[in-house]
Length: 286
Ligand SMILES: [Zn+2]
Ligand SMILES: [Zn+2]
Image (cartoon, rainbow, N blue to C red; front, side, top):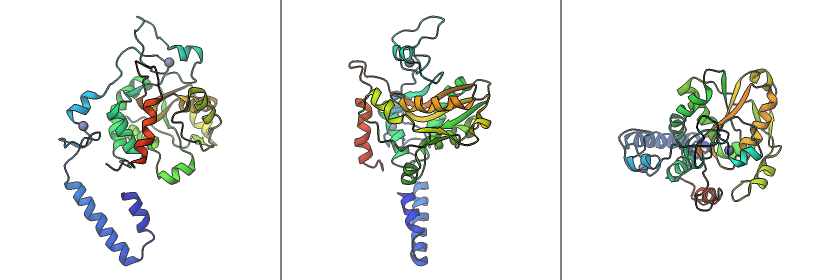
């Protein structure tokens, strides 16, 4: 992959570095000449960052009745009222709303995983493009500030980038809403939460976040919008929002690329997400 090659390039003797550089440049030209492909299935499409018709039609833009707090789809809407799901009523989340661009289905998952593990950083802009409408509805006219969910520094070193920060950057470029990458810190490295239940997940992320020095001055009176790629159980968003609420912000909400929706037949939220570990092991280079 390109970024691994670049890291290797910095340790090479000058001659090898030149040959390596020429190979990289050659690859850039080949990449440029290649036709654009659907980010989900790889079919050739007409323009960059565009889904093919099949993948586009498969995306679920979550337009139906949903919980006003956590955006989980609900069977029916109450006219004139903001309905909340049973989980949010029983244990209200520390964020006011958490819309997502799409439901977490095969195409949405592939795009998110190719950004995260396949280093397709251009996918951040594609995701941000579809997050723009929910961002505008959420941000309104207030003084919003985008706060990407941070990675612990060990994970940042091993991955080389924070996918949520890339999406927040792209959203700022498209919407003009500023971001603050340094407001929230991830002070505890957390193990993957795949296959864990709701209570276990909450325990894993408890104490994982802290406010950075100076965060209160920057957050005071503003509407902080947490940005993340996937909203599954909401444990991470809850833990991060709980800390942001201590900043003196006027409001805290969240916006994600994809919302995991429970299987209608089983009500199970987590089996689908468990598939990610298999895809991660494939290294997602496609
Ligand atoms: Zn496609
Ligand atoms: Zn809810």
